[in-house]
Length: 320
Image 1 (tube, rainbow, N blue to C red):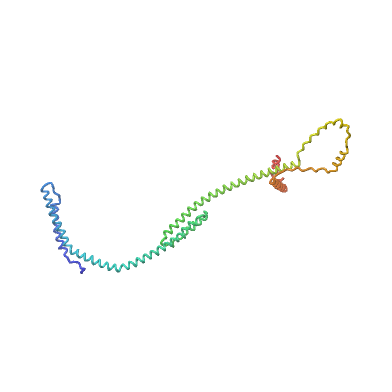
Image 2 (cartoon, rainbow, N blue to C red):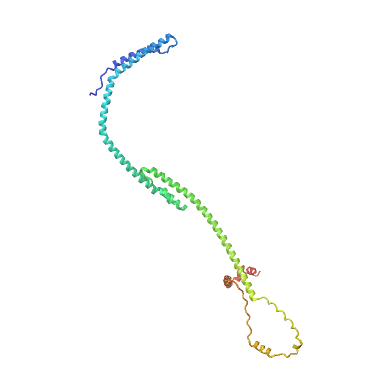
């Protein structure tokens, strides 16, 4: 099979078509305007034009095919020859493409593995700052923010953009946490001040109550001591009623003085009974409180409490 192009005189072939082109002007003048089909003349002219134009059209198409046939045969030969060459080239190319695809896939797998490791580094070296920030106070968060600012993203290669985005995310997260923590600390400080003031007022109130209770204990103790030193006067016994007059027989009966003398002797020989101290019954806790108050009072007196300011007013309140 030869691959040479057919030798054809294209000018001679085109001359045949030029005749058709030259006839176009006359045909356009004769049939370019559609006649009135309602008249016989117009109808016949239309019919004649269709016949003549059809003849020109079919002959022109036949001429086109005759002129292009050698070229179409050549094109078919070229297509077949080219297809055969392409198949032979593909037989050489395919192993190379397969090898390249295999290598590209291997390189892509390694790249994805490398990217996965780099993303793990992002989690550990950058995003872990978010976990570290949990539970820190405002000062520690400020220090953590300064540390996060210095994160170096140069060594992340394929995922450098992801590392930079993660760094920005961490910084924004720490800034927001720092603001919330500052507000919590401010509220906690205010609450602590309120609690401290409540505790101070409560302690002052308890101290006043304790002082008042101690003062009352001192008053009661002093009153009891005064009562012991100055007991209330005992009521005088009522005078014995005059004995009824003896009957006449008794008036003249002689008195047996021996029994009276014996009783008098016995009374004079027996010792005089000792006076029994007055007692008061109180609970053990009250007794302990009185002893403690007495010891405290003695200690204060030993340190010269009588010379202290307010002592006289306290004694006046105690005596009231």
